[in-house]
Length: 209
View 1 (cartoon, rainbow, N blue to C red):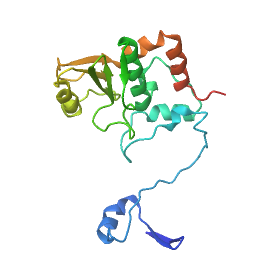
View 2: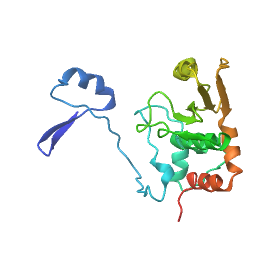
View 3: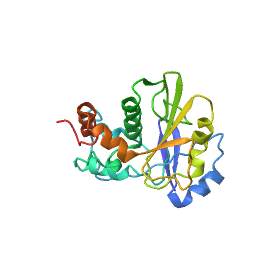
View 4: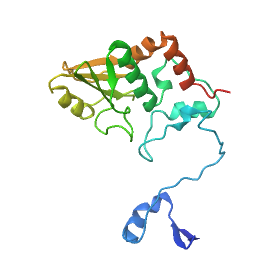
């Protein structure tokens, strides 16, 4: 354990193996525990030039599917715009929202897709000629579990509601009340449209310069 003071605050450093010890020793009313990692070979990139690198995980120290995408962009590699794995979860949600606009000409979203500025329960919420349209986007390569879909299934049973599941892999159980659409279908559909094709190429490129 190392220590010191920064701006008048006492700092104590614990190695990862001693985190449980720190939680027992430090009074939570007087101390705050922060996780940190030592970075080597740091490269500074502008988010304005490399929009794909803006995606950050919602939890620390966990497996995170977009990590390969971030690494490739960090290395300066463009990604395949027709591969679902080339997009971050937030980008996939934006594409699915755009897909609904294409297949439902009157669809209009009423909230930002997913994320902290959207809704915690559903990724997509909108209306189409008086019909409530909701959607869940499962970007992971594995099959979504029943727990993943509980909210979507429950919401789909409300009157005047159309529910969509966008996923890379079908769930293990059938849900007839939900319209399942492959993310590959979303991407192929949008890639045939000049406007969205241009946007998709930008999403997976290292930079615009």
